[in-house]
Image (cartoon, rainbow, N blue to C red; front, side, top):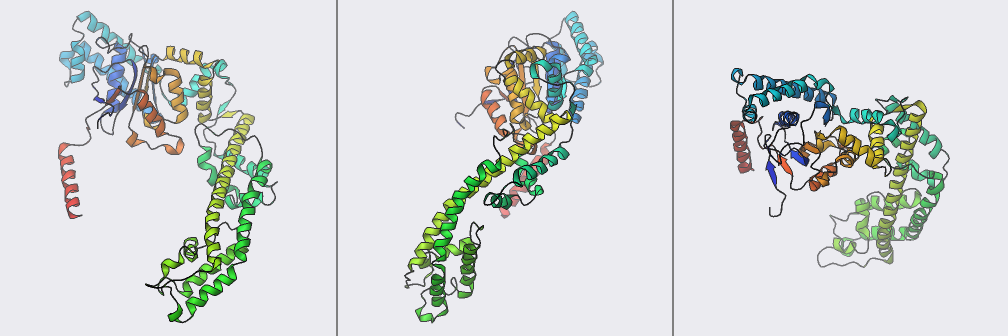
Length: 498
């Protein structure tokens, strides 16, 4: 498509190892192999002019982050194996057990025996040092960084890690029920009970909001401070609408049922779509709505709307007309006004949910502080706040860039907004800084961690900021040509039969 950003097929031997770059790696395209190959080049300081990092790096200089402990361990072992294979290849290329095109090409750039021996030595030292390599889960790295920079981030060495917040979160929910819901009186209590019939319901209704990244700010007031006034206005409007219809309902029901139950010759309405036995329950629903002060809308709402002055004529038989009474016009006005009132209640209930989630989060933080506990999510949020702080943030980011001049973020599509903020505050993706390297590696088609805060918008933002520096792994090594051809043929036959 004209104007679309260009994506270059990645060449692991010539990818420029500086600035910020986005690499899209679909399943089966050799992502881990590529990370290991680029890591090897960073250790050697390999590359032609404009392709290499400013200097050769050590494993402790290259920050590699992914999402699970298992993936971290696998990545570390794969990189170590790759480094060891390269050492053997550089020292005895003629004794290689099987050809390795990548290492063969790399070896050609070290034709001088002394340079080759030096390269093998660097690789061997790096392989031996992999236990100290900076390969972490994002959670573990945030925890480590906060402890190493405790004064800049305000971290407390006495805190203990809380691996599972479930019990404390349940305590916070119950505290919300006792401290926020118990003191309420009508009409505010009715609004809350309609949403939260129990603490379990509170947990269910606020679960997604409690996981927002960044988290909701703590509420500045209680439900009792603002909800009674907020609930009064729409409740009064609703009561007025019910009173208006109560004055019309019986006469309207008598008129409509009289037509439907009377002689066919005097009934202009279609007998299939408008039967007395079908309309009676809808009229009853309107009456029940009037009699129930808490009901927002009548049951069978869409069916009830057939009875308005604007809709009844459409149910007439051919060449027949009907003149609805004024009550049917009242019904028209009522449903229009009811829609506006319903929107007010929808907004009000959303504010109640948001307040509850913010209160629960604040209470959870209090409970953790009282017990001296902190979660991995807290570590991320603290580091993000520290880096974003106008006074301390720039200096902290500079120290982290100095410690980790190169960073590789694996599974970047599952990055949360807070995690992306951390990376960007350190490496400034938009600046494309030639003195650092930020590789963002992922595949938006594989984003699966939305339930724990993964934010595809962060991926898209990073894609915009790295425009012109996009790369892709172009070969899928898990699918054979014969298999793909067979599947394409099968899909083609299916489409033909459809």
